[in-house]
Image 1 (cartoon, helix red, strand yellow):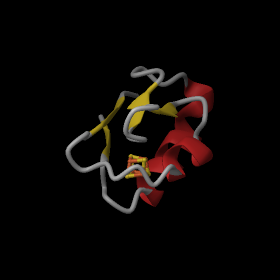
Image 2 (image 1 turned 90 degrees about the vertical axis):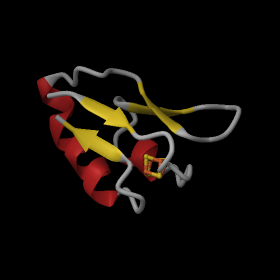
Image 3 (image 1 turned 45 degrees about the vertical axis):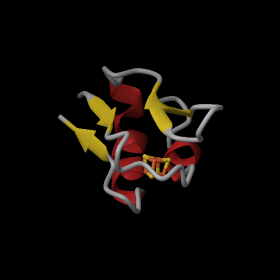
Image 4 (image 1 turned 60 degrees about the vertical axis):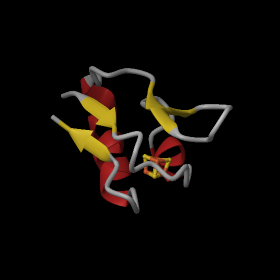
Length: 63
Ligand code: SF4
């Protein structure tokens, strides 16, 4: 499973990094999210899905 963050849609709410800290980090300069692991290990797939569902901006794409 692969995930990416649409930077133009991300508003830096931080919810994804809270829901899936092993998958998403937040950039210091603007608070926007980035993926720590683009290829999500199986054990983190559930939290990555939860983060995508919880993103208020629909900025997380799962492929
Ligand atoms: S929850 Fe969505 S909008 Fe908020 S930081 Fe994460 S990707 Fe960005």
